[in-house]
Amino acid sequence: MIVGTRGSKLATTQTQTVVDSLEKITGEHIDTKIIKTTGDKIKDSQLYNIDAKGIFTKELDTALIDGDIDFAVHSFKDLPSQLNDQLTITAIPKREAVNEVLISNYTWDELPDGATLGTSSVRREAFCKLHEKNIVTKPIRGNIDTRIRKVEEGEYDATIMAIAGINRLGLQEHIKEIFDETYIVPPAGQGALAVMTHKDSEYNDVISKLNHEDTRIEALCEKAILETIEVGCQWPVGIVSKVKGNDIKIHCKLLSPEGQILADINETAKKDDAINTAISIGNRLKEDAL
Image 1 (cartoon, rainbow, N blue to C red):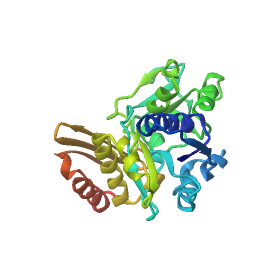
Image 2: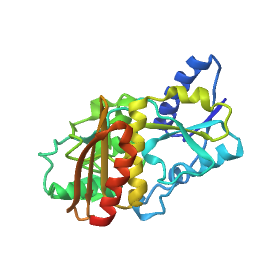
Image 3: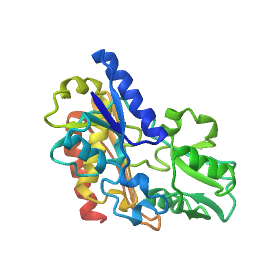
Image 4: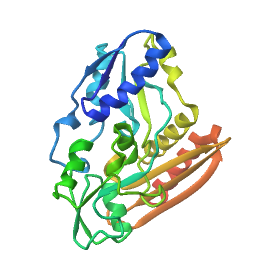
């Protein structure tokens, strides 16, 4: 088998965890192919100022369709709302923590007026405005190591990141503060990985053994809300869900770019009705807030 991945340290680390698990199941060696995506080539633009649909996945999708690779590993939150109809999410392994974290020499409450916070996320920028932080947000790109270094060298006073990537790279010592997931609501699918294959792949049965069922329900539920409201990363929306027993709790917060709350939904459903509930939430958001 051949796996395709982006070339960043985080992408290759995430891919290697999937490869290690799959090699234990199959007893066979898996080769890795690095594929550069459009998103990797764009270094100086906020993601919401460009056509971001499939920006980190399109080239890997093409490689799957052409048969150059047998499966690809993505950060689930990078998936476009609508997938290529020849491809499928065959496995979603167990999720990492979903929280956002502050990287800074300051705590969140200590950030001085006019402090510069590096972010290329319209969602994070809107949540900063919601919490009335008197700070200046500036675009920041680059891998996790690069963004941490830019803060440490004083180019920015702070940045906000996903704890999942920090944990996977073993960089926890740089975390100044962990935000509660209700304070800065993460994007749909944060902390989860998606293993993509061609629908007709001979390896689908074995790759599906990597699934973590509760994570799969959570991630697909969150994705279903995004698919329904059809806003992608162009609108500040945080979506997070948690399976507990036979239930799933869903929290969705939609903001305006100026940080005003347009919708704040908390709902509990049976986990076997998660997708229907997610679609219902998405339709309510479209009708009432968008």
